[in-house]
Image 1 (cartoon, rainbow, N blue to C red):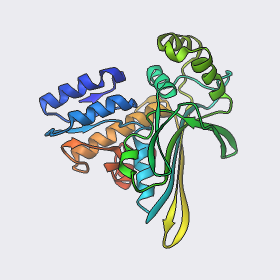
Image 2: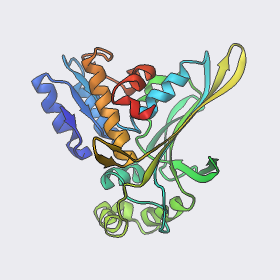
Image 3: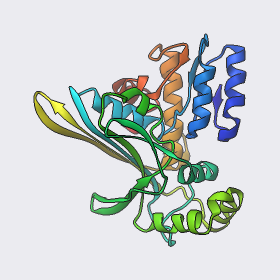
Amino acid sequence: VLSAGPFYLTPVIAGAARERGVHYFDLTEDVSSTRQVKELARGAKSAMVPQCGLAPGFISIVANDLARQFERLREVHMRVGALPIYPTNALKYNLTWSTDGLINEYCNPCEAIIDGDLRETLALEEVEHFSLDGIAYEAFNTSGGLGTLCETLSGRVENLNYKTVRYPGHRDIIKMLIRDLRLGQRRDLLKDVLETAIPITLQDVVLIFVTVSGWRNGHLAQQTYAKKIYSQEVNGELLSAIQLTTAAGICTMVDMMRCGDLPAHGFVRQEDADLSKFLGNRFGKYYA
């Protein structure tokens, strides 16, 4: 079963898959739904594999692969953005995926490891600025992008966090809508406002930026993975970058399961996937 439904249907679909003893994969970013899938996976004879998209999803595979290359970890920073190539509005943003999921990320609590402790942080906070290839970006806390990596690296890393990347100025406007105008408490209205005012686009870019620091061979070292993926034509159809990376993520995990490269029962984390096998896959090649 491959679930691309809204997050609130995740437990229902996952429960049906478990009941019938078939493998389950989904694209949810919702933390609560994923916890329910994990509970359903207890004692399951089939595999339950949630969060198979970009973030959560591929980003955790990359971060875990980098983390394995260190004897002792200090920090893991994960940054992902799906952005229009040609921003024209004040938000400098176009809708490219589920509006419900986007609002979830902007409103729900975020997980992080701070000074070795698992904590919840507020979405839209801890803004930072950086440049990549001469383009300025901002990044800030959003919910769900870490997947299960907090649990996987608990006790091994001092600081671990995930932030969404946008063009500068986006966060301030979104925070005004969600906090000052309290649209975070009226999510249906916020969804209607966004979908009425913000057009969709296929002309986008996915930015993946992971930095890991720690000790290796007795020295404090840092290693970074940076990648930009653009929209492209696949089998005669133009796919946006976020469509491509999302589809490639879940298709690769299904294919790796078929090939015996993932655990075949119970709860399967994204970071259980080997990065080199993922990128070498016929679907994972779109990330390479």
